[in-house]
Image (cartoon, rainbow, N blue to C red; front, side):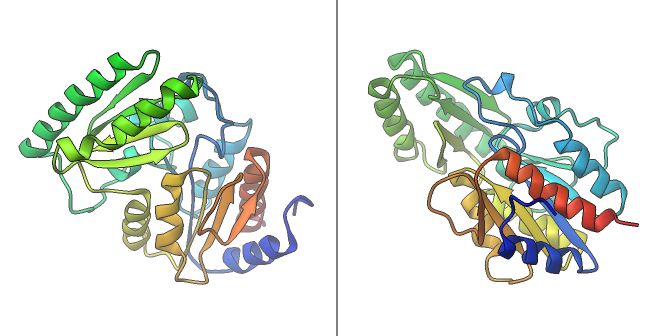
Length: 260
């Protein structure tokens, strides 16, 4: 195994990979792909997505779980439609496989989305040059690279949108505020996927505040392995410094699960 993994994480990987059926899942931006100012410029570290492909083709379910919409995630990660890697986008609101999260984009949700877009568009116009990203079940305010004196009031205003539009859920991440009209999270999506696949344990790596829902959902079972990538308070059981170490963790899992 790579020498840059702590002995404790190595031991956890040993125990995890020895289990019969497991799920290996990871966030994309900030984990397999270094963060950049423009998400359209994001690219995964060479060979990182191939490790997920390798796992999936060898019979170990593997998934990318992201706040990106499904089409953006597929394009950025370079995952072909025929790939066995499962994609979960928009914090669980979209998936390449059917997941029962108990929430659907019905007419009322679509009206909430229209109202939210109207309010957030007004906020963005008042705080240039913040950017908006539209998703099937939400809209995102991006402030990466924006001066703090502009980003902070824009962020505060976006976080108050649920006070104006009932039924909207605000999630704050790294230089983003995502407003979703469906009550879904990465944690709920991972739980549903794990249940549908019938796995004994899940390994998940994430770097953002939004990944804490996944860490929280997995923390009560000691067979699960949760890895925080980068600094910040976390519920994860382990921490690595950045994307290269996250890829090293993934490689260690793939080597063990596909050996022989």
